[in-house]
Picture 1 (cartoon, one colour):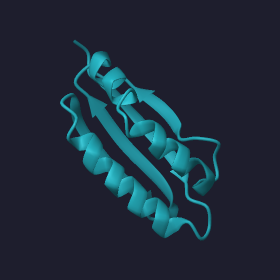
Picture 2 (cartoon, one colour):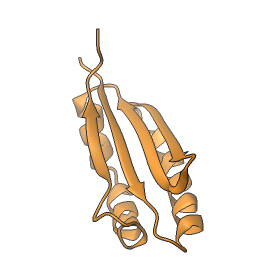
Picture 3 (cartoon, rainbow, N blue to C red):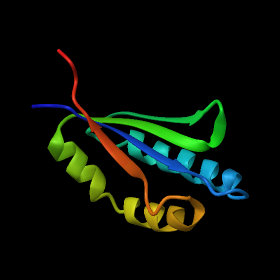
Picture 4 (cartoon, one colour):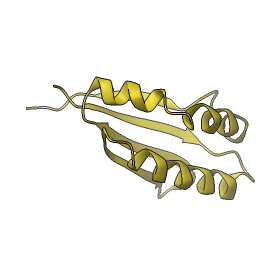
Length: 98
């Protein structure tokens, strides 16, 4: 089993900062409770607090797919879309260097 690790990023629109922060923190609590979630860490850039970086890791690809199918994911992404500058979160999948 290979862990699935990724980095998601997006930028909150001006004026939406508080709403985005509230939403992502609520979402993070749900994701962290998923059986296959290993970590879901939310950061903002020091130089641009509207720019979010989320580091996520899941036990394996099956756990990541279960995360994608969680009933709260779709509504979260739909609500987030008009509040961010990008069309959607930009995902970068990562491989461990061993």
